[in-house]
Image (cartoon, rainbow, N blue to C red):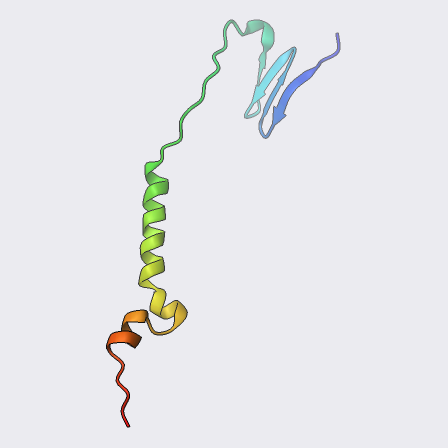
Length: 80
């Protein structure tokens, strides 16, 4: 019987006779049960990095775009 590959991505390969992950080969005949599932990603780290990015963006505004809005409007005086 010819080996038929059902899934092959990265370091995981599944065929009708073998299951290979991280270089370790398992015979499909010895697999007694499988379980499908989805692991939810943790969102806390992404939200924290986003908030830090927004803070840095607004903190660095004078450095990125020259003088800030507040410096020009409230603290600049025309001297003749």
